[in-house]
Length: 432
Length: 196
Image (cartoon, rainbow over all chains, first blue to last red; front, side, top):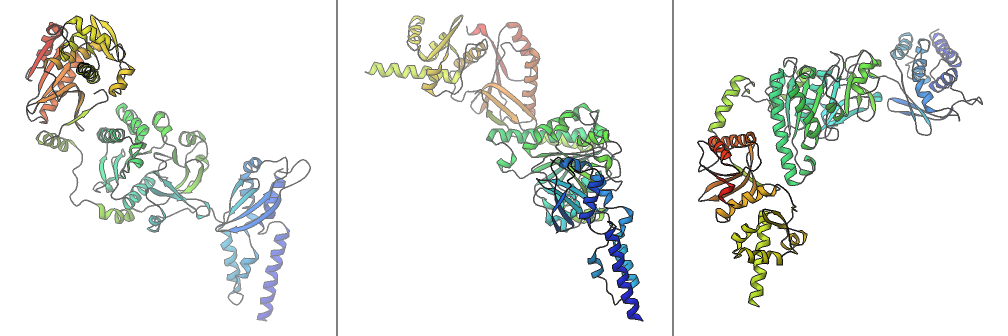
């Protein structure tokens, strides 16, 4: 009797599978794509439709390569991306079963729960489609969308080189890195609580860990210094500014350094710090930057840093919810090619950050963002835990706490200068 | 033969002076190179015309032309300009101080990160800086700013000995004003009339 049940269950499932397959709802994505294309009207006038050329299984996704009939363009397919995505995910086809799934079933075990496990496993599935065209139309069907949480771990440190940051993970588990030596400045935008400050923390922590000797920071946090307070005593951090007055002081100090570096570079005929062999980089990180928008002096210096900073090894990280003309001067914005944009409510807001739409379509998931360097990529940014940060920066914390920049500090500073012996630099100029 | 070599040497010296001081009037060249009477000086400079350009500003003012620059390997080209008076005023001081060997034009004095000021000329004598400033068509506010920065330099204690400031200006009135500004610093002020 046991054998009877077993065999009939096996037969039943096989029959079911065949039924679903024939109904066009089965696990054959190729067939589905063809169907969807046909139903979307992506058929040439002579009735020709897309023809499969190759199907290959890659790590995390399946690639379907089609030949498009003459008279259709890849753009038309790209425009219908939603149709393909949803078509591959319709509820009815949640039973996205493949024969291979049944092969994995342990027929000798508890059959009912085994089969249920197969079905449930598939229910979690959310396929994501990408379309690319290089003479052939390539559909990449990812079995899984982006993860909702991508935790920052120590292994990530090993995956990035010198000035690279793991900025997030893209479809198919591809790690997206941002290289601060190639793309200097960055604007980070997006609604509150979707990961702006977290992204800044990822960047700061990674740099401290990877380049402890060469990196230095000026942290300007106009939220009252809350999110950067833990970095206050790290020796790579020059200053933490908490209000617009301190921000101006910090920026002025940075500008002085910038001028000095520029003079050195100019005097020695170098084009930039890379050529000069200077390994030091200084990062100016500004969170909630809109709060210094109406401070003209700050804006002037920021413009200067954005324009001349790259060559001198100065990097600007500018985070604000909504970088419009009022909050970011156009000079700064044009000099920051790289953008990281979290969820925004409207397309207009998205345009303010990315100069194009897209961020309004992101799902409401913390850490989900669009990274735009030369091309937009939807990523899940890593989530870094405070405990992890503390563990990482622990070796770099100065035991003797720095005195916070304030009035007392200033007074002490001026006194020191008058007593200190200065050296006079006597230099000939071009006119000598 | 000896005469020819002497002449060549004198020409060379005149060209080198012009390389260093950019513009020189006839009377300044006369004083620098012992050219004798005015008539003799004009003859010598006329002979050197392949290497020199000149324009008139009361008297002939000479500077190197392309040939001349190539002969003494001078990099920077100068031309007829109203600014030449600034150079002539400075050169008057150079001659008056007896052509000091340490004389340098347009020198930047800087305490990095604090003060930067470009002096019109400086030279040192007995370990003491002499700072030369020319006030030709400068605004008084500019002068004031410059003096302010010199004061800062002194306050920072970068000079072993107090530097001596020498100014040359155009009118007696400006001389008075400058004298007031320079109060407390070791200084001497000349007017153009003292030299020309």
